[in-house]
Length: 431
Image (cartoon, rainbow, N blue to C red; front, side):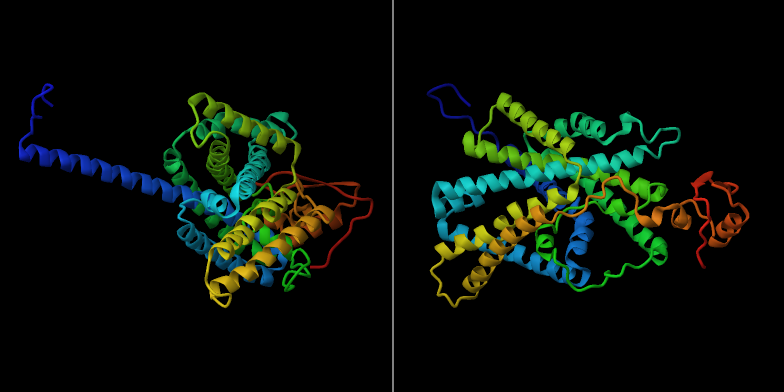
């Protein structure tokens, strides 16, 4: 630049071209990095923990119906996104909030904001519950550690993981900085799936079949529609399984790394509603700390994951996916009533209302049993062969037939010592 009154000094054409090239390359690289980070964040948010929870919804609905519901919910979710895009085009908006604000005014915008806040906030609570339950079982497997030690209890684990990991990560202002964290979480999810498949092959033939395993549908199918995203699959495995212990550790880390993404969403909703979308550094820190503190306190008081998932699904997911997109499109679109999009919207809206109402009533009046901290029946001493400690049925029954005392010690070379407290009469099972 020249002095005032002078014409600006123009650099040589070759230097100018080089500068433009460098600037364009820098912008291109920055854009590419942000796109990659966005992809990893989306994958982490959708798959990171959700894929582990699908068996819970299958159990609720019945396996055959659960598979059908999974495909149906996937289709409905995709169709809802299309409706949101069409609604945004019709209203001249580019966000979910602005679309609802343009369509239903401030009351609709406020209702949507409450739902958008509650959905990730309740997810944060469920992540804390999973972290406490999962990592406590991991630390109990450390040699020499007393399982009843308060230092490895779920409450302390939740507090420590929050203070050391989730709070610092959630304090980032730019969600793109979580891209590498999301990549790590995605890799760990791949390891988890490998462990689950390995245990399906090794344990599947030994686990007794349940009577209603292949029943087509169950009464809780309505609740399953809203719970197609979370759950704790590792509750189904025995605690003394070393491979599963490693999987639990990976799962706990994955959940911790997914937590900040949900916190970003809750904070963004608050910023949009109360601060016009802009937060000062002080407000950013205060709001983040308050959100995470409240979520942590609630997760310390609640240890049953099922009811949390069900309520989050029917109260938040159902209106966000089924009701609101359909209502916006029906009000904005001038297509005839016989148009396929309008017909589908007219079907989705009442279905979403039914899922929301019936699911809430069933979740409150008929809550599922919470098996927090309980071992599965096949992890009992009668099923040693299912875990790392393997004793054949013949060896066990032979030794039990010899020792008919009130307390029987079964010791196998190279294995851990197992102490069985038996009744006065030894019960034998046929091979």
